[in-house]
Length: 162
Image (cartoon, rainbow, N blue to C red; front, side, top):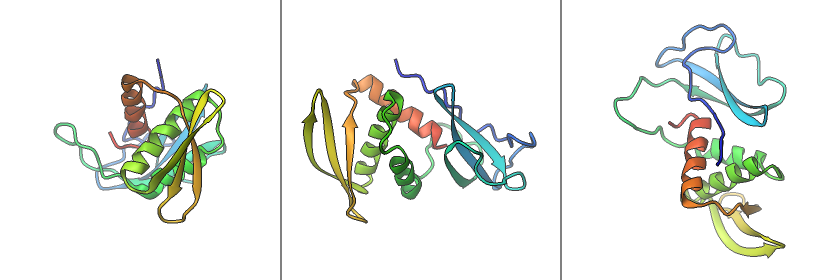
């Protein structure tokens, strides 16, 4: 079972504890703590840059609470940056996370599938960036449909899209 335990936005600054109100800008940071990705939000006033050891960070604007389940638009650039930062990572949780991000980028037409090849017991997908032409190798972790859905939801939560 895959367990990321990444919480959605708390709508509070992790430094000051003050509430971040709808319409206000904020910064979010993705950190690894005890082998898991953790998201922390910062008000603009408390932001002093990404903390040491930050895996990724981004700036956003807090939207009002939604009625029902509705996802925010996907920021392709932020998704691509996350994908590139995971390049070369060998930890199983990061391989799964990167694989799902790659699938999302393929669906968004930012990456294009070129070929797959076997590297020992692993399948490696070769993808090309449609904007830069850069070629990327992505390990297929062999997720079941259920695991794939779980990791996709974890990606959405980590990036604040849920």
